Image: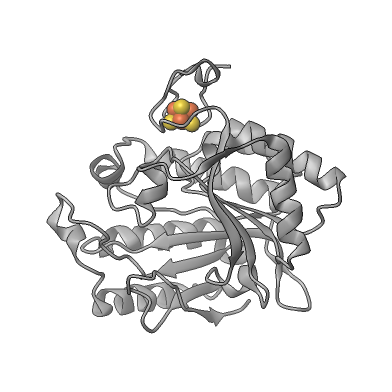
Length: 294
Ligand code: SF4
């Protein structure tokens, strides 16, 4: 099978050793899996989200906070059956959900593994946590399998996508992918324990020096989806290595983040998470606070 899973459309024969832009082999490679407490509270809950970090990435943003996984490819190959067992192990350990982080380049195998896991008793929701740089046909493969979508919306202006992630067409593809995600799972549903059962949370990681682009993202999301989605506005950007673009070698200014939050509030955004406190340290531990409404 030639790989056209994402908008890079490399047409690479990964099963026979050809590599595309993501450099990923055809087998699933996992960097780690664990109960993870640092997602939005409706995802982490008391016990943690059953997070599976996939190695390699189709975006390869120059500022990646997980570059050891995305660029240095730390991880080990797992079979579809092992992936299924990992999902069940996380459920047995009390995970609130199965949280698939950067899964795009393995979707066909993940679908197979999740089908197997569901047959074997996987009951907790499945979260698809991605950059949103997706082909709609790939997202369609997940219909009925994924309960919660947790995409980023990184850039509005394609010049940022070109500069930082080497993609010319980020916004068009990401916005179409998010449209498909919302049409599959509908508006947000939260159970009596405050845990999300279905719906879409769109994350926007604010970048230093790009406040006007961030405003365009928030406005687009609110104008398009109003309260049907949750918007997670993140300020945890941390430079983890020296980058050629000097603006990225700094954290986001508190005053810029406050301005973005006020802008969102004035627009009418209420279903949102914001971050407060010391979220920009080297542990990248986000401290999410409920903005209102969920
Ligand atoms: S998943 Fe990887 S190989 Fe496939 S189209 Fe995207 S970047 Fe290319």
